[in-house]
Image 1 (tube, one colour):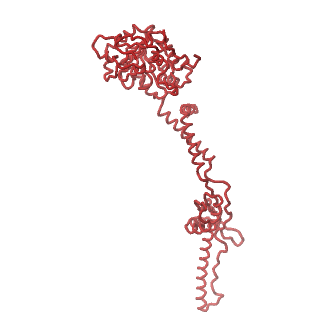
Image 2: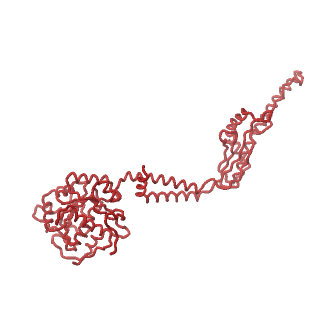
Image 3: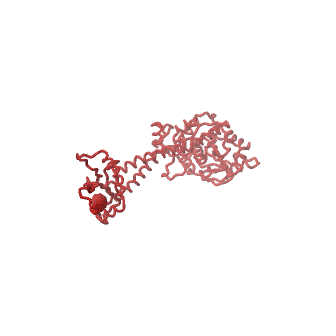
Length: 220
Length: 278
């Protein structure tokens, strides 16, 4: 395969690989895994973390699908340089029989596909509650080893709580440089209240010297 | 508050505390080193108590002198004394302020002058002391003249009445000493009393450190953030799956390496035709 290599000495790339390893050995079901990334508030790096996590999974030769389920504030399209087009919101809003094959977009890596949000919508909670989303995720589970869902933040809206019932694990991304710990606690309590399978937290934008968490600069 | 807590808070906000303290020191240093130095000199005066016949000073007279000192200080700080002193000092001597003050509750007074010309302040303090002494002496002489005139009028009346001199009342007795004496003239000061750079900077450093540490505690309370994965794990009771470092702004990148690698990878055909590829 002709992949553009990820720099081996890149600290951030290594941290995403470390996350992949941790989740691989977590309590997720063997083989096919659906993981949702959310955060307490906006701008904590949730979409970036989900996108990079999906990228390292794909580089690990595992078929991976990244679903942008943040229908109010989609970010994945811009991260991957995609133009707005037909996406999840349009699929959920339509009554037709269109499915995953119609909205999945391939990327420059054969093992990574995307489901773009397809433009911001106002009635996101209603769309995400439809059975069609559950069917879509089950369909993805049959095709991909890793299904990564980028969900909206927990505190302002209920979307993440709705989505958490459809996935195998939930990862809470926390911007340690600015998010009040009380906000993260409230987000955790909300997810616990809906029995979300909370796997743990990603300490985003951490001080570099976090050697206790398994990465460091090493020769390329 | 424990030392551990102090160290932790300062560890979180050491940049803020350092920057603010250094900025404060720089500001204070700029003010200190651009301020024109001030000099101060004092002359010491003593309010005199009358001597007893045996040459000693009674306690009552000493107490009286101390009470009198209060009145004399008030007199010293009047326009009259300032005017008299000004004639001696002359203009352009850089004198900013002169005043009298009682030394504690004693019979001693200080005539103190401050100014920007080191050589002039001692002369000004001495001029003020002398001016006060002269004013008091003028007043004393005027009182003596008044009492003497009254006595002479009484004697003249008695003479007209044919009273013999032996039966005249005794002449009034006047104290022979001046009311205040300069007992220590002001000397030219060796150094400026203000500003004092080292002392001022040390005070600014200590105060700055205290205030900025207080600010750090305030921020800690208001922000209440978990600054490390360990703190996050302890606060939430959840495992920290990974700690992702903060991107270096100097690198100019807005997306981290894995996504960049995807975007830069060679194009391939779209898997589904419904949406366009980048």
